[in-house]
Length: 325
Image (cartoon, rainbow, N blue to C red; front, side, top):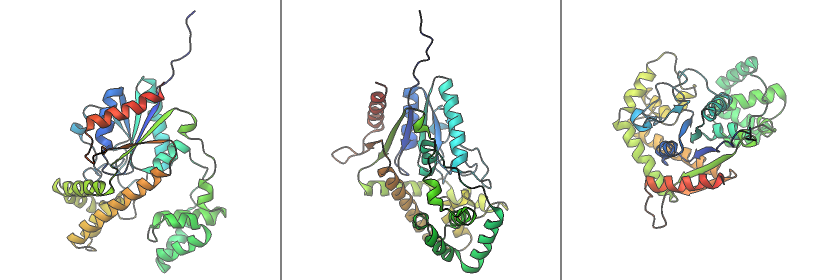
């Protein structure tokens, strides 16, 4: 008698890495090899109009592979890690139902954490307390609010820049409304994708940090050659956009916006954008090194030369194949 049991689903492929490490091209090649579809894990790619500065893959780069969670919000809208987790789960279910492999690729580590580990039950937004915090910040400055946060939630404060207004405000709001630190809420047990599915996690990066820095510099140069400033100028002219929005705080966009506001010279903008992008890559690498069950794939060979895309694809497929045994 034939078995009615459903075939075991193929593992979800998780592709992570710092900015400029080559995730986009690798994800496309893996999707073609595995009959998969790509789910973008990038907090900038969700926004329409953020194209050049976000290194959004165009139709040619996508090579006919289906991409999800790109261009799903206007830049004046909010999009949270919880929103991403819900949307990504729906995409994963849909892709698997059609017998294909979901490939999650990107560099927004907070999104990965929310999806893979699950989200704790956070207090609901308290608009009255938020307005109170905003008023105090206008009087005292965000560094002073950051110092206040450091007294009640040093763990969260240590992760935030003293001028990161949105996240400082939320952390103080959580503390004042619940009497419990945001870091404690985040440690509460969640139910994530890793609890429900087989996932193969691969992180790619060149072993030599200097090589990554050079790739970042070249990407930044290419952005400006492709018309990045014209893109930001169009956004800057919109009345519904400002620097307190998550979309406009994205690396590169923030610095270009401040140049248009007259806060930076052109040379200062270029330097600050480069430094900010390198800092982003450093934070991504730090997160990945502390993340369990990641299969590291060095995009440099032992002789220091960069591996070809074909070789990286072959090594990635080997890692993925072992998980199906």
